[in-house]
Image (tube, rainbow, N blue to C red; front, top):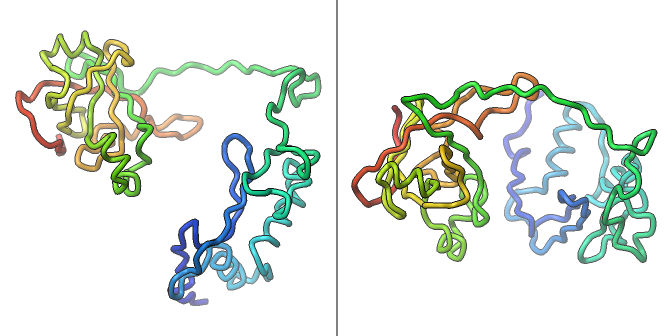
Length: 262
């Protein structure tokens, strides 16, 4: 069965759809539509329902509210929650009385949710990273986020305020490591792994332990993942983007960040 191309036209932003989201602190919040979607764009649930019905599933939801009602009915943690009692700031789950309470702040205090009420700690076998530092690549690279930016920066780097606070790609180095390499704060350095090379500014930081460096992954002009390995955890299948071996050297210059393949 053919599917029309515009069945996927759901590029609506948060202000153009009503929906319920749940954050990591268990807060269930209602997003309220401010604007109608432009052109033929539709909200996500309508697109998903259209695809489901073309697959013969026979869905018949009429609103995001109806979908949330069903989610509550089959999710014990959401018991008692509804569109009407989420309010302006949302509610925490579980919540025995959302009309008068924000919800249970601490999930487990005297007991854990186990048969005996105790926390069950399971030992895990430690495995070394696939790529360890050596004479050629002596520094451990850790990648991650900055407070000001999100993922590839496609949204946050368009924000004048956020981009002003954190405008450039930097490698964070321990002061002793920087001094040993003859690199000063604000100068440019070349960071290389077995897979690629990037050039970026140096931030001397007491946060990093000796023998380690940190590079945020928000900056396409100095993309950290040109350096990282594609090895994965044998059990969780999670990529080892947080650990690989790199070589760092001063460029003897100042300028814009850049990148390239090794």
